[in-house]
Length: 331
Image (cartoon, rainbow, N blue to C red):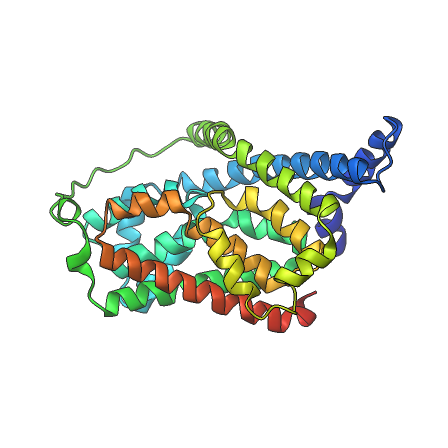
């Protein structure tokens, strides 16, 4: 039963077969480069779009119960590592990209929440949202998705805890530390208002994300059908012990969210790249994108920014090598 859900509901393999028949009717051979590229592009674009809209609607509906004021109150009830864990978990039901998470991070920090807790939130929000769990399940299977999310949460909790223990509060910019916090109770939404909010989030997020989906799927189709497998295997396969480091470094200057990154990861894995190397690339792109780091620099001083980058980079690389080591168990 679960295999059917994973393959036909989440993976939509039936859609791939339908598109394959349609491409063939147009006179393109799906076994050829051009035909295979068209099939890959149409299938992944439609599949990710459908999953994206359904996921955003569901997650946004849940998120309507956790406005910033309520989230702050929830986080304020916990202390120590438990607060970091709650902060990381709260990040799973918040915006899908790092740039969208930073305004919330700034709000939580200026409200007086512990700095380590807010960083646990900031790390987990783009890396391990609920959308990534479902999408990863549709591409890589349940075991890979669950381990990915658990490892992402571990990075978030450990990273936030380290920042807390190192007492980095002086390295937050003055305007945030001196900001006055005003508690304003959010009005209780009706069921209809929650559904309207969820629908609006779908439209807003889709408009922002769809160009990256097209770009990611286009790159994936190129990798999948035009780049020789030997090239990918040589650079990101088991023959290169530094493949995880390379994938992480390549991913940092890029900007995309999990929806635009997964098609690239899927194509790389199909061409012989190791699982951990591919997932390290995904984590780096979603968590350490250059635009988000530029935004974060406005809120924190260079020393704290550098510590954040080092913690995330080291954590991502370690997770990448761990996934490579246990790949035979997971796939």
